[in-house]
Length: 229
Image (cartoon, rainbow, N blue to C red; front, side, top):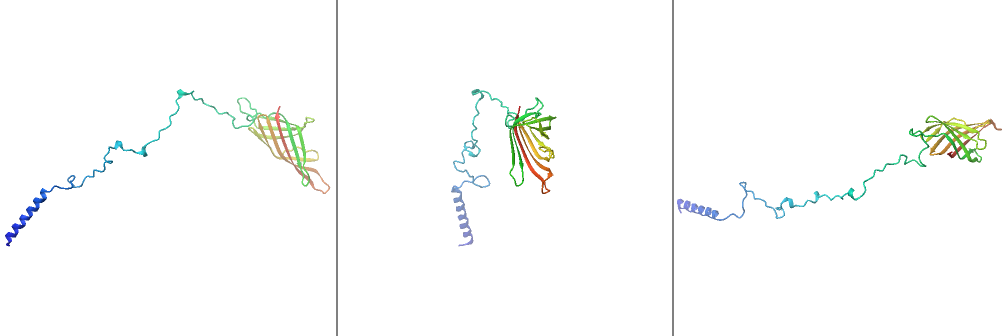
């Protein structure tokens, strides 16, 4: 076959191929000019957004408060001023000033214990004990232990008060006599309503030496519990 004949046959074959491609429809639709297929998604994804449930965004319904129309209006309750103070509160106070009144005569019971080294304790009890308190200003107190039989003052000690409690000044003398010196080492007093509680410790030194030439020393404890009359 000549060269011209081969060219004619090749051209005819090319025309037939182009005609075949032009007549066959495309099986895959193309999208826009970029040629990328459009993803139409599933039937669920094509639902409108307004119908899509979102559990994470749902809020639990709040319980409705009772309407004031169904019951009496709320009443404000005021807390008591001295809710934490036992026995009716602190000691009696002056009206409007808030100052605790300590002064008065208190009657009750007391106990005096003398501790001797190597010997049994000497204990004195009195169920008719009497204690008197004099007050100067808001904090200065003079506490007198009164003999219940003769009504004489046995000894008096000073104390400094802060509200309904007071502390005895150390170094004072109480329960001493001509042959001994008794010194208060520490003490405290409390007042609740009309109840007075007094406790203090002391050290007693005998002035006369014993047969061995040693000075006799011992300790004492005093406790009083009574009410003001």
